[in-house]
Length: 474
Ligand SMILES: NC(=O)c1ccc[n+]([C@@H]2O[C@H](COP(=O)([O-])OP(=O)(O)OC[C@H]3O[C@@H](n4cnc5c(N)ncnc54)[C@H](O)[C@@H]3O)[C@@H](O)[C@H]2O)c1
Image (cartoon, rainbow, N blue to C red):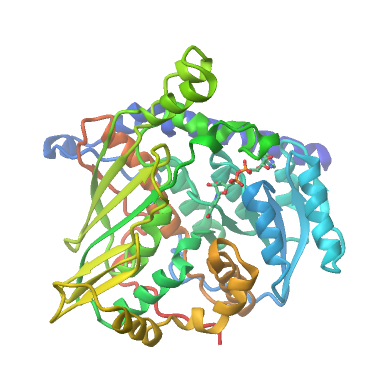
């Protein structure tokens, strides 16, 4: 029996590696080879429909309610260790397994469980132990906070072993991986939720509520971004508080485009009803040259250092424009290497007004939209349109923390939906569409910003699906 399960694990790893080699980010040429003649004639590059259709859709999937959600957390670095802290605050959530390559991270997490009066979770520290974790019988939800290249392999394996999966952003780093997630969720009828926490930030939730109540009219255009100076963090060693094996720096060496699109994109895509009444049609993407990492490395390690001499592919600022089939546009930016304050933009522009979050939240509405609202008008609007989730658990969320509380609201909703057998707020189609920008933006950048078609991961289900409503937890 043990031998059989070892063989299964080996086969899975071989297949995962083959998938990446055939269609992953390292081999964009193969994706171009899958264009139809028609696509070539239209001048539109198309990553194509890479997998057969025919599975049962998971749009609106509701599963059997779980009285207690039994959780395994894989990856206990900066993000996963915080997830332990938050999940321990939630009624009906129980952590049964903890997995990381660093034994101290697992021990620290278990210490937190003990402090919270809970039994220690089973500990795993081997390189492929995440497979054993996914195979356990006493787990309902695998919560994946590993580096990007492990997101999809773990998610697919977990779903194939009957588990729901919540995974960090981006859910996938290639179109092939996006389809793997969709196909596996459909085959197994399991939930696959990307943990896009920014959808639960207070201003984002309020603007969603305003949008649903028609305050901005028809939303024609939105902007989002991930502008976060990570130069220092990218070069730090894990033991000094940096990333495992410099995984983020490694991506900066090998890839260009928008490597991390979903923080800015997720909230505006939900507001615009992407995959529910509308969908991404095509995009074009452009990057500046790379400068920030080399300059930083030369200053920190010396101009002749390997870090300064190393070529980095990632252009400092990437700007991606997406057009939807309903004729709306989105502008999404990525910049982790320029000296700038943190910014996710979050700008929404409609036929009756607009809102933007950075540098300071502001709203302008007809008939006085030439100017932003005065502070007292703005405060009154915010009070009137506060999202019910923020009203219901906002105070507790701010106390628990996690990016000001949004992380806790996200976890609260996830566990609430699983316990009540409700569809999740973000499904596998969102995970795929939002994450697909990683690969598609790179395809465009490497081809002089040519237009690229965005696959319809819903296989047509977007036409009849309703936009995400203003949900509550009552
Ligand atoms: N949503 C957010 O706001 C947010 C914020 C930060 C990071 N993230 C995402 O969270 C993920 C993790 O980021 P991080 O900052 O915590 O990075 P990190 O490097 O601190 O943590 C990753 C952890 O995964 C572990 N790991 C690596 N390979 C493993 C394996 N085979 N088995 C088990 N564990 C393994 C590492 O030891 C490390 O502790 C990334 O995908 C990142 O994009 C999201």
